[in-house]
Image 1: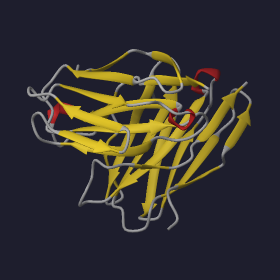
Image 2: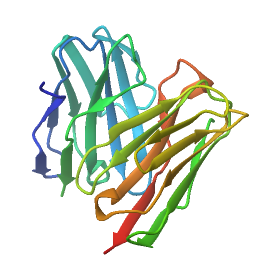
Image 3: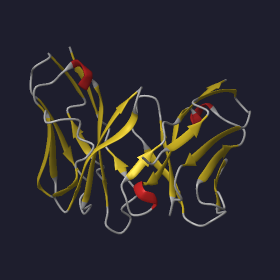
Image 4: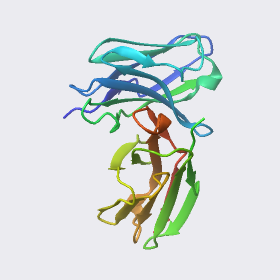
Length: 114
Length: 112
C-alpha cells in the first residue's frame, strides 16, 4: 500500500520566493493534516481538512501561509513570500473516518529558506 | 491553552538498560496515542490507549494510561539500538474529538 506521499523531499529557496509543498493522502482517508516540526516548537498543527473542506486553520502562522485541497487525493501548502523563520520540516498526515486520531504521516518536506 | 508535557526531553542509555518516558496532559483525555520518529524519519503510530488504567504491551514496550486519564507512560525493557528515536505522546485537543496535540517528545539514544 502506498502511504502518504509528499513532494518535494527537500526544498532550498531564497527569502521572498514562493514555496509550494504537495501531499497525496492515503486513498480512502478523508482527513488530512499539515504539521510543521521544529526543534524549538515541536510538532505544530497548521491546518486540518475533512472531506476536502478546511475545518481548522487556527495554526496557520500568518497570511503568508495558505493551503488547499481541491480533491480527495491532493493537497498543497503554499508559503508566499517565504522567510528564513519558515525553515522547518513540514509533514502531511491523513486518517480515516473510522479511526480519525490514528495519523499516517508522509516522509515530510525539509524546507530551508536562505 | 491545553498542554501535553513529556519528560525527560533526552535519555541516553546503555544497550540492555530499561527506558521510561512520561506524558502529562493539563486536561483529561478521552484517549492518548504514542508515536515513534526515527532520526530523519517521520512519526509512526505505535498505539492508542482509551481506558482508565489501561496497560498494553508490544513486545518489549509497555504503555500505560493513568487512572485519571491525564498521564501516560511508555516503558522499554532491555533497550536495543533499534529503539533509537524520539517518542511522542499525543492527545485530542479539548480532551476529546479534537485535533491531536503532540508533546515535545523524548529523544532516546542507545549506546551499543
